[in-house]
Image (cartoon, rainbow, N blue to C red; front, side, top):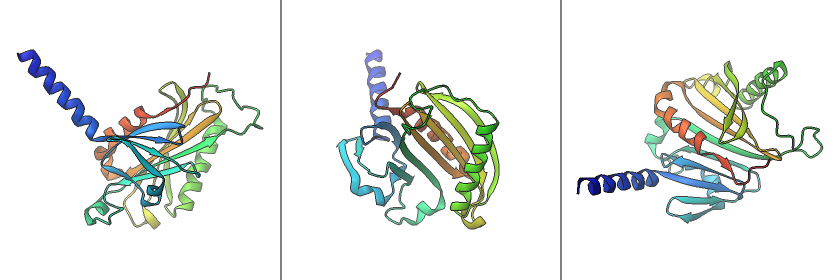
Length: 210
């Protein structure tokens, strides 16, 4: 009897966890699981189709989708007390590029470090959020896919808001890649850290090219 009760509790925990998360698929290219503390930006809502209770399919021509803290779409006052963004961008690799389809492991060298600094500075300039410093650059593997990871710290909007930590993952799959950017206020690191980790672990492409 005790064992039966334990099993029932375990099943309830699984169902509870599932109810707290949503699996998103995009253009049948990749899938990623996000907690229900996040929502799609309203501009993305016209391309959404709910496939199941905890599964959503997204169609987009731009290959770009953005998630934010829940409540912004409905202009809930409490939602503005925090800041988080998850941006996912899909790219098909250039067939004219000499490295097309090679799929080598990511190697961090001087050229990559320079490119990362340039990218961080360009992103900050475009968003009017001055770069403070690059924190980390390293090669990773996410669910078998070679990944270039880098993070940096920037000022808040127009330098007036609290500093933000930006984590960027460039995930490669030979003929395609995804750039996944996870940003949150430095002061809210503990709030978003485990969610950040779980989101990254959940990402995968539909097809894994060898």
